[in-house]
Length: 219
Image 1 (cartoon, rainbow, N blue to C red):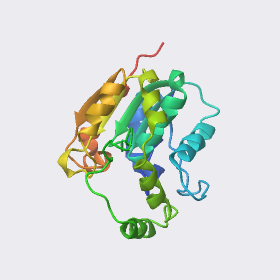
Image 2: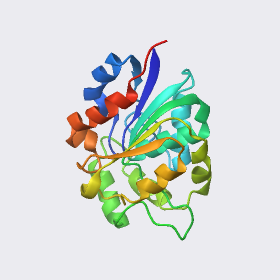
Image 3: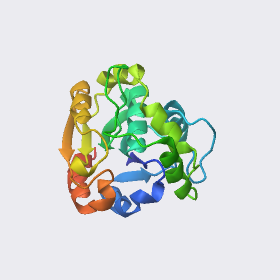
Image 4: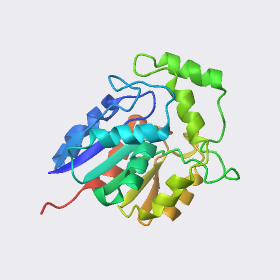
C-alpha cells in the first residue's frame, strides 16, 4: 500500500479532503491529511514562514517512506517544497492552484491583485476557529518575496506532476503555471474553470482529472 498525503489551503483544514478519501483508498492508497502549521491542533507560532510549513510536514512524515502529495493553494506550495527538499521520496504530485512566488524582484507576483493587510487580517479573523488569524498576512507576504532556492530545486523534482489551474475565476495569475511547468521535468497543466478551490466547487470534475493520474499498478 502506498501513502498519499493531502495538504489543505490556508484557513481551510484537513476535512476539505474527506469526500475524496474513499476514492483514494479504493486506488490502493493509505491516506494522510495533516493539519498545516497554525491550523486546528497543529502548533501556532509567529511569524509564519513557508519553510516552517514545509519542515512541519516533513516531521509529520517521518514514519513514512515514498509518498504521493496532493495540495491546494498554500498546501500545494508546501507539497512542492517538500518535493524540492526530498525529490527522491516523491512518486507523484497534484498541485491545485499553487501560488507561485517570484524568482527575482523583477518577476511577477503570484496574484493578479493584492488585498490590503487589513483585508487579510479580516479574512483570518473570520476563519479564527480553524486557524491563527495572523497566519494569512504572514503567508501572503512570504509568497510575494523572491524565492530563488525553491526555483532552483524544481528541476530535480522528476515525479510526474499534475498542475490544476482554476481558470479566470481564480485570483491567481494563471500565466505563471506555464512557467512552473516548464521548470519541472514531468509537469502538465489542466484547467478546471471553478476558481481557486476546484476540489470544493467542482469535485466530480476534479476527481475525474486526479483519479487517473493517481492510479498505479501494484507490484
